[in-house]
Image 1 (cartoon, rainbow, N blue to C red):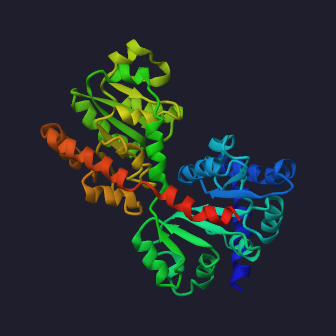
Image 2 (image 1 turned 180 degrees about the horizontal axis):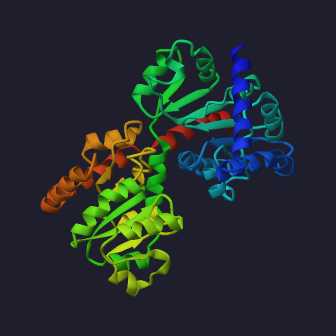
Length: 413
C-alpha cells in the first residue's frame, strides 16, 4: 500500500510539473528535458554499460559531487562516468561538463522509468549526493546488487526517516552500501534506527572550494576597481540583503562594494542601481579606467564570484532572509570573515563557522552596522575573524580522499 502511494505521489508530481510548464520556464525545461532522456541514452550510452553514475539534484549538489568525479577520473581513467540532475538549474549549467561521458536529467522515479534507465546505463556503482532518496531507484539498484552510496549526507531529527510511520523511508536508507555523512549527529541519528554502515567524513564541498581557490582566475578589471581600498563583497544577494548592505555602503565612503546578485536579470540590476547613492558601474560595461573611478562594481554575469572573493576584506552571503544562505565556504576559503542573515540553521558549515569565530549572522541593519563598525575600529578583530574562517575550511578538507580510498577496492573487482 505504501509503495503504491509513493508511486502515485511521484506520478502526480510529474503531472503537476507538466501542467506548470505552460507558464513556468523552469517546469517547461524540466518537462522537455525529461522527454529527451531515453532518446539521448539510446543514442549515446555504451552498450556494455559499466558507468560510475553520479546523481546531483541541482548545481549546489554538483559542486559536492565534482571533487569525487574528478578524482575518479584520475584514479580510473578507463571507467565511464554518467552524471544526472533533477533540476534544470543544475542541468542547464553543467550539461556540457567535460569530465562526464553522459549528462542528462534523471527520469521520474517510477518503476518502468527506473528499469529502463538502469538497463541502458548498466552502472557499476551509483553515488547520490546529500539529500537524494529516490525509493524505486534505490530498491532496484539494491536488487541488482549494484554498490550504491550517498555522500556529503546530513540528517536531522525532523526528517521522515526518524518519525513514527517512517518505515518506508527507513527501508530506503537500508539499500545503501555505505553512507558517508557530514557530522557525528547524522551518524548517531542513523545508529538510532539501526543503520551502522556509516562513516563521518565531512563535506566534499570543502575540497571543492580549496581547489577553486587554487585555480582562482586573476581579474584585472576587478583589481583596477579595488586599488588599495577596503573591499566589501556581497555574493548571491537578494533584495532584502541589498537593503541592508547598500544602506551601509551609501553612508561609508571609505569602503568599496562589489555586488554579485543571485539574479542578474535587468529588473533586478536596475533595482540595485536605484538604491545606490554612490558612483557605480556594471562589470560588462566597465574597463580598467572606469572601474577604478567607480565605488561599486555590479557583477552582471555568471562564473566570476568564486574568483572575486580573493579581492575582499569582508564577504556577505545572500539568501539568509529568504530561501536560505548560499555558498559560505566559497568565500571563507580566502580567509575573510563572512556575514549572512538569520536563515542559516540548516547549514552545518554556517553554524560551525559562527562557533569558530569566522562568520556572523545579522538580523537587521542595526546589527550589521554594529558589526561593520567593530571591524573598522578593531583591525585585530577583523584579522582574527578572517583567520578563523580560513582555518575552519582547512580543517574540514579530506572527505574526497577518504571516500575514494573506501570505494576503490569495489571498483577494482
